[in-house]
Image (tube, rainbow, N blue to C red; front, side, top):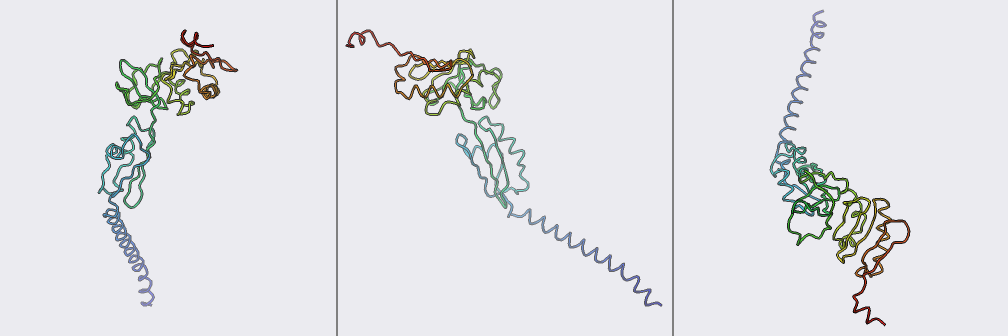
Length: 258
């Protein structure tokens, strides 16, 4: 039965041939994919930056050390993110690939909220208590001065550890922007006697750090009466109606009044 014997041995040869064919096609396909992924189609053509107001897109790209023309799969987004994150003004950063050739950088910036006097300079501090920069010229900066706080050994990008700063920031963040613009100083050297001063030289006595939103609301109601320039101080440190002391008119004006 030679015919039967020959047929029995032909099947393994066919099986081996199919395996060779499959491996060959897998190799060719993998090679094609490799060259496609490394082709100019995936060369970075655009680096898009969003969310910046204080930093320019060019500064962000330079910080990330990302360049156009590099294969999008070879860009190390983790390293780029780490490089951007060290900038003091950067609160949060996200980087992603948008295929085939765009890298997207989304920035959340820290917002400056106050100035801390520090050894003849002023430290710009953010809403989350981070040290942003040190300046000595305040001519173009309209931010309240926070007194009674020590920056310690903090440097740019680091959080300032003084607990009194948190209280000052809580008061400032609770104050609407249009009202905050008229604040010249907030003093937190004594956390039981927190005081705020306005550009009209009025003093606002907050007392401690309790009921912050309620106190700011009371302060808003007082200044809505449009006699803020005549106020010497407002005491809203206790529950109930605020105590208001007005500036005494000069002696000559008193005499002229009927």
